[in-house]
Every structure is written in structure tokens, then in C-alpha cells.
Image 1: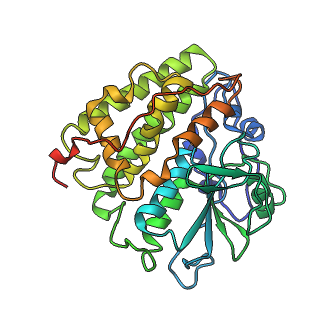
Image 2: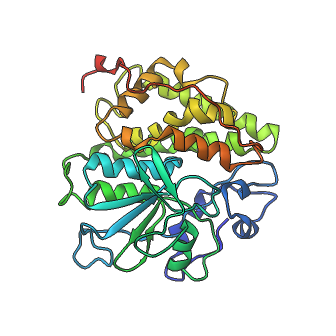
Image 3: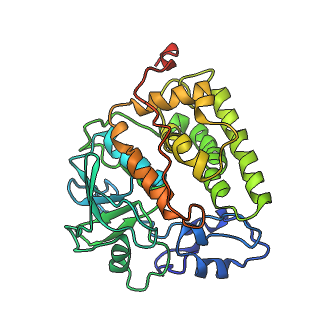
Length: 350
């Protein structure tokens, strides 16, 4: 999975304990092998995601190496990537567009992720990064660390002042955006991880990540029938659980939007268009879940959220990036769902 571990970080910083025990594949061997998501496989045929590597934090503390300052940081994302998209969603709904710039890196394989600019629905590929002259995400990683040998993934939160990667772990990036930039945010009172709900959010995040966020990947990248069926079972158990919760309240933690909703949304918005077909998650479509489907439309219609979703980009990337799953790169023409259509979530108080 990942071979580069800076000396300044402790082993615990990588959450290595979160990686399941691999009886037939040693951790050392796993670290050395993975250069893309398709490499992250155990000998049992199950998909095992590797941890992120750059784990520094931006802070409001004046003594911080990475001080929260307007214009200092740049976020590299891909509209295709759900992990990167939730970081972009935070920038949008917190009102930090003017404080934190971003670049989209669209099509192509995970190993290179060619730079581009993104304007509306049109991407211009082959562009040069205006801050570092980099033409790919890989070049950024190599600029930040001359001996880096892990995956080249987004999101990447870049420090333009120190010319290095601050963090590439989406969970930590969204927590920084939620709290550390409030003095310059246009929507500073929005707290997506309030202290009184953190325990509940963490509990939701745990089983939603395992069963749904990462669950669709465990279905799609499985190389044997057994691991696929087990992942699919867990996926639909988690979706059924969400459907039940959302039949009683507007959002996952009640009637207020939280981090848990943003994390679930980025998978749901891709479900019928990509995961149902490409990752074989076709037992039941999102549109067949009345509460989940209307909930997805509700979150999509939060001001700023729709701008983080570009379905053309999402579909071209997924269907074109995994030749072992879709060797001819054929992109399905449907289903073209209108997430701006009316929903029924107003029946719950906000």
C-alpha cells in the first residue's frame, strides 16, 4: 500500500490499526505493492484500502506551522472522487471560496491524474499547475517528498507558502475547514461537527464508512465471489438502516445537517449513475428507497452543494479508469436523474 512514512510521524498517525488483519498477505508486502486502488487487494480477493500519508493540521494558533490564512492554501480535487468532493463541499457550504482556491483533476488513471482547469461543465486538460508548474498530481507528491512511493491521490491540501502537502486525508481536511477558518468564512456559524453530536456522528461515520462509503468499493474491486457477496450484504444492510433512520427525521442526527450527512451524500449521489452498474451494486437502486432518494435531493439542494457534483466528470472517470472492470470504457447513457426536482423532506421540521 504505502511505503513512504516520514520520520517526523509516529506509526499511530497513520491509523494502521484500522487496516484489517490480512492472514495471507503481510502488511509490509501490502505497503510495497499498492500504487492504485486496484492494487489494494488481499489474496482472498477482498479490497483493502490503504491509509493516507500526509497528516499535518492547519490551525488558528498563531504559533502553528500551518496557520489558517486566506489565500495560503489550495485544494486539489477530482469531481469523480467522493472523498475529495466532500472537502470541496465544505469549502462551498462554509463560504470559503475566496479563502481556499481549488483545482479539479479529472479523467485518467489514479497513478497520474492529469492537471486541468474546470470551468462550468468543461474541462481543459493538460494544464500546468499555476503554483508549482506541476502537470500531474504525481508531480505534487514528488515535490513534497523526493522519495515518495505511495499512491497519488486526491484530495490534496497544498500550502502555497511552504510549497508542500499539508494533508491528504479527507476526514481531517473537512474538520480543519469546519473550525479553523471561521474568522474568514462567510458562513462561520455553520458547525457540521458540533460537540454535543460528535459521539453520534462518529458512530454513524463508522458503520456508514464500512458498509456504504467503502462498501461500494469492496463490491466493485472484489476479485472473488465470496468477498463480493459479503460486501454487498453489508452494503444493503447499511442502506436499509439509513432508510429506517431517515423515515423518522430529516437528517441522520435529527433535523440539522452534520458531517455524517455530507459523508453519506457523496456516495449516494454516485450510486445509481455509477455504483449500481460499474461496481455491481444492483440489488436495489437508490431510487427504490423513498427516504434515501428524497434525502439525497434535499442535501443536493443545500446552497453550494450542487456545484460540487459534475455527473459527466464522475461517469467518465469511473467508467474509463478501471479497465479490468470495464475494458472498453463504455459509458452508460443513463439514468440522468434530476436531483433538483421536489423532495418530501420538508415534512420534518428544520
